Every structure is written in structure tokens, then in C-alpha cells.
Image (cartoon, rainbow, N blue to C red):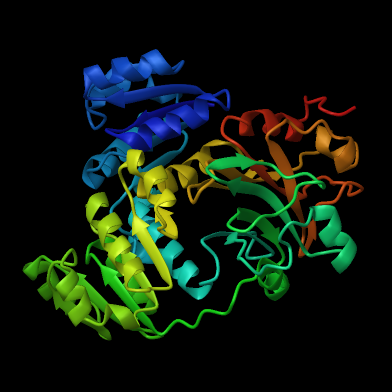
Length: 454
């Protein structure tokens, strides 16, 4: 595909890097010449210096030949104008990043579609909904639902008294029989690997597991997870992400929202009905103590400051909060945040980029998620095309690229956990877990021209 990306930061460059690895022709339009020179030195792509909402710049870039135009600047107005102009100039499809979708009615979305915007994405809405899913599944550190929840991917921690401690996958299968879940990646002492049948589990391992939704109790039991009751939630940051979280959860839980900006606090009173709003600085230990942090079950920090979110989550952990979630926008802080004990890390840029990359990778890709919580990797749901390598031999005979593993298969309304003798069929959706840089190699197995089998 011929893809044009208009961006002014990390979202655009992450998308470009992911798509270059998938053998697309990429052009980046950005007003910052020095930044583009740096990008050109690290990736094989074309760059255009200029404003993407300029007709002249778009024509110079040759946008009339674009299969897809992606506009992900911080300014949603520029993104909307860029997408509209690109479509009018001949681009086949367009995607625009916007601040929020929650106030866009179906009628308004249709108007934007008629103007030329095929898809609108809000990183804030996506991140907020991810937090809501985690609150509803408090024993997990990260999760990803596939094909309307027919299969899900969970990140769990192996506890001290877990029945699987010091046992291999073969041992566990022998003791418990066929299981409706499969471990696809393990992070141990800051090192990630794809497990084999002989791999053993240890206390403290962070494990990504592909599971059927009705198998969670068995999964948690083997991992030594105890039930977590959630009643009281404290949210720090009343911006777009915090607003989405509180709006979606305030009917089910007792929520306190701490916001330092007085005017924003006042405006939230018109939006949130059952959330207790507190105007104050959450970095103050005295304030957290006064507001009952010791009785809080989940602490969520989603301000615009990564440092504030990390610091306040650490304070919450000291007070004994069961689960902490931090929005960390500075990519340099992500690994540090994971290593010092914050349970779940969110990053709007990478989350949005994963959603957008999915749309650019073709019909054979149903979904894609970038993993952050301890394991730097990708989860992708690929469709098996007629005549592709994965449909020609059982899984155990496929030449699966090193650093990747097939975790599960969705066939119509049925789901299956991958085993060696399983035969993938045309139109099956296949859940693949892959370490960085491997997805483009895995994709070849799902294309008609591939011969990746023995």
C-alpha cells in the first residue's frame, strides 16, 4: 500500500516504523525539518516538510496516489482538514485522530464520513475504555479481547503459592488434562521469552495467556490469584481520559476524582453525576491520606504528567492499594515504571498507533495490540487466506518464525486453543503473539504466495 502519515510526534513515527516493516511505501508529512532528517536516518521512507492541511503540500506529496492517509497530529482540527482535503484530492481512504468521540453522535459521524473521513480515532477514549476493562477484571494486569470476546489475552502474575510454581507446561497438562488457555509469553527478571513445553513457571513471572472467557477461574486458580473485590476507586486527573473512566464507572463504584485545576473541576460537575470531585494536588501525601487512600481498592493516575502519575501510584502502593494504573506518555519512563511496581502502564500514543496500524495492514489483520506491561511485543489476530501456508499443514509442521507463537484460533462462533495437531482452515482468525520485529515475518504465512511450511 501507498500510505501517507501526517504527524508531529511519536504516534506518527511509531506507525511509520510498524508499517515500513510490513513492506508498505510510507511518506511522512511533518513541518519539522530536523525531526524528519532524524527519521530518514533510521527508516526507509520518504519525508515531506510542510503543513499537511495545505493543498499545495498534499499535491507536492502526490496524495492523489495514496491508498491511505493517516493524520495524527496533536491538533484535531488539522487532522480533520487534512483527511478531508486528502480525500478530495484523490486518496482512497483516510483516518483522523480526534480528541474525543464521546460527544459525536451517529449523525455527526455520518457528516464527517460524507466529507471524506473514513475513520476517526480518539486515543483518550481508547485508553479510558482499556482502564474500564481492567477494573472489571482486577486480577489481570493487562487484557485484550478478540472477536467479540470469543478469545481473550490476559497478563497475569504467578503468585507465591501458585500450583504451577516450578512446573513445566507438560507437567501442568499431565496433571490437569487439556486446558482452555495457553501461555504464550513469559517475562522473568526483565527478560522475555516464548515458552516451550519444557519451560517452567516461577514465582513473580508475568505471563501472557490466551484463554477462552469461561476458563478464567481455572486460570486464576493455577496462577494462585485470589479474588479482588473492588468498591472504592480513586482517579487522579480530570482530563479526557479521567472523564471517560469516571463516566463509565461511576454508577457501579464509589469514585473520587482529584483534579488540581479549579475551572476544570467546576466543568466536571456538569458531566459527572455520582463522582466525588476533589480540587487538590494528588502529589500531596497529606491529601491522599485525608481522602481515604488506605480504603482505596484501585488507584488510577491519568494526568498529563507522567512523573505525577508514577509518583502518585507509588504513594498509593505504600498505603496498600491493591491495584495501580498509570498513564505514562514519556516512552523513556515505561520500563522504569514497570520495574518499580506499578501494576499496569497505559500509553495513549502506542495504543492509538496499534489501532491505526491494524487498519493499514489489510483485510487479513482483524486486530493488533502493542503490549507494554513487562513484555515489549505484539498480539495480532490474522485471517487465514485461501491458499496460504497456514492452511496447508498442521500447526506443528508450520515453519513459525522464531520469537512468535500461535495461541488460539477463532472459527465462526467457536474458539480453540492452539495445539500441535490443529489444522487451521481458510477464513479462520488466528491469534499470534510475537516479539518485536517478527510480525512482518509471520504475516507471510497468511499470504497466498507464502511457502512457509515443511
